[in-house]
Image (cartoon, rainbow over all chains, first blue to last red; front, side, top):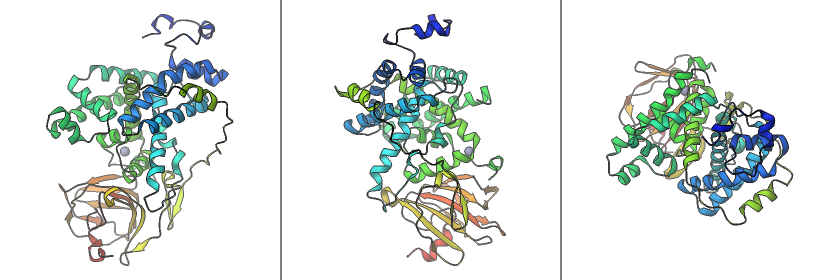
Amino acid sequence: MIYANVVNMKSEEFELRDPTKSHENAEQLILNIAQNNCRESYKLLFTQFAPKIKSFMIGQGAKANEAEDIAQDAMLKVWRKAQLFDPKKAKASTWIFTIARNLQIDTIRKQKRQDRFNNEIQAESYEADTSEKMISEQSASQVKEVIKQLPQEQLQVLKLSFYEDLSHSQIAQSLSIPVGTVKSRLRLALGRLKAVKSIFGEF
Amino acid sequence: MNPQAIAHHLDDEIIWDFVCHKLEFGENLIVRTHISLCAECAKTLAVFEAAGGELLNDINGIEMNDDALDLALARIELKDVEIPKAKPSKSEAFGFDLPATLSGIEIKNRHFLGPNVWIAPIEEGKNKSQTYLLWIKGGQDILPHTHTKREMTLVLSGGFKDGDNSYNAGDFVVCDDSISHAPIMLADEDCLCLVYQDGPIKPQTILGHLLKPFARI
Ligand SMILES: [Zn+2]
């Protein structure tokens, strides 16, 4: 980890760090925003995450300009909601990802609405049901460990299903393996992740 | 609704599809509603979202437009004019209390398919997929049947039995052509479900065989 050498720094020293230094710890950047509206921290956070969100959205089938907009909106939400971020409950990347994902759902709903029976859905900003429950730092690092240790073939299927807007049969095609194999690899990978739940019990 | 009583949960693949945003609107609504009622599935979601966060961290970014950072810095100076959203509250329809995830979702007028059954459409999606509330009066008989399409049902109120399984408020069931169903409605309690099905309304839903005589509408 980038921060391994400063883990034991006292918090005063921590705050004295120059926020323009690259590879700033993302959790700390969000805290800086929450505490001081720190624009330098926001710049760094934006530079770090906006391109990733854009890339993810394009993988999900969004056009480049839509993906750009979602990345912009998601980061704006990060700025506005920074006070709600609790590093004990979630890693920065998970928190930002959840915000982006909820935004994506909203955006897609808005688009779809036009050709549906005119259904005026107002639940767009309702995120509490999916984003409030976050897992502890300890569980989060366990999740990271599980992903690291997944067999390559399971990781590949997990990544493809996450990054790309592909069905199981499309994944099967692209890897030249049977659909059943895709499903069983995914199931195994998810099973290993889910085991984190039982290791730590309550989050 | 007592969350302890939930016996039939979302499977891992469906929760993962939810995280990856692969679900249709109606499926998404059912999954969100179940998760809002079920601590167990909410935990699984939290783990999978953490995995999503890790994978996002790993992704190679795609460069933003040249002026993106300037735009972002300008936008944060604007006053946040968002109207604070009212806390989602329970909603009510046709005399039933509905979970908060359904508040703000427009539910169309119900139509009776007979004295003991009605449906209230919520949305028609891709390939004529349907999302709707289905109500069946307690004690109604349903003939054995199978399904031809994928379908999700979330029990909101009341319940039914299917073979050895009992389904009650909060329970989730997904069906396809592999299983034959012979649901038995509870004698004394009406049943309300949120249903998504992957195609036009035909006698295909787990509780839908009784719709057959009315399917021409
Ligand atoms: Zn559950």
